[in-house]
Length: 115
Image (cartoon, rainbow, N blue to C red; front, side, top):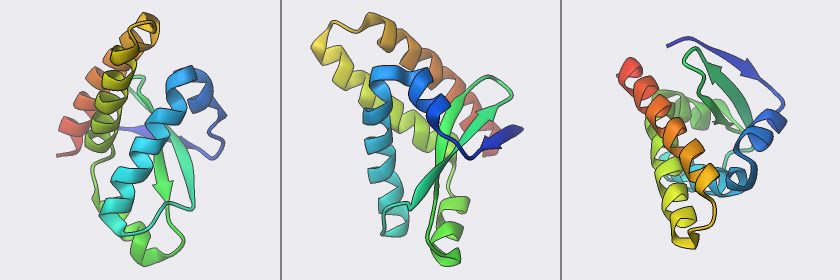
């Protein structure tokens, strides 16, 4: 599935609002398990189905190749799922939970298109 890459991730922060930091933390954990190190920074991607996500940028080519071999839709889906669980436990963020559900559906479509 086609996407556009943006160097500035303020759109990610704005789009996911209160959930952005939690999503980023989950993504950081998941991607560090893939390469063994934390990403040095993030790029924002907007997919043709409207999904807005961030992908990691590594400090060197070897680490980056590990990130590039991963499925960003699948990883984002996991992070959004964990974030949804966290917000559902507080039970006072229904708008964010709905936003995360929609993002999960779009991430699933991206994941399937990449496979």
